[in-house]
Length: 183
Image (cartoon, rainbow, N blue to C red):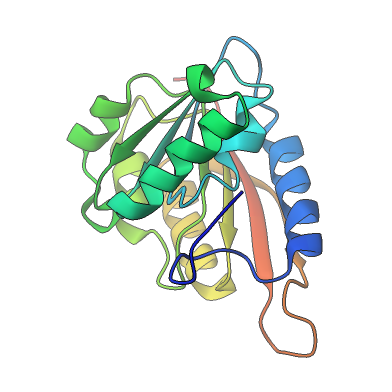
């Protein structure tokens, strides 16, 4: 996936492939399902999920990154299986969720500050996705947001782990799988 010098992309491409494969395997998107990718950036996870999901909706706050995500989807023959929406996910509301349409599964990959507003909105929603994979470069904000989804939203934390994306540093990518029983 092409990117520009000012675009965010994972610096360790070899480990990024492992992370994407693990996240998609945990999310387990099915051919009849609609999947959302919040903080989708260039489409790092969106394009991988679009290979097995019925449709992937990528949501991102940066118009420039969304333009590259669309171009990457086209270049990879996945334009028909993807759509992209510009939205400030730090102000995520039920209206944003409704704009995405019905979502069966969701991947959330926020920056270090996490996805607090997203977690609160999903926890308050009766129509939230059944399965969430949350990827984070900050285990503390992942834990905070997962606690909201579990204690306020009725999700169960099925597993969590780390991937050493940044060798020889104290930083890791963390990943969690959450699932909600149908309401």
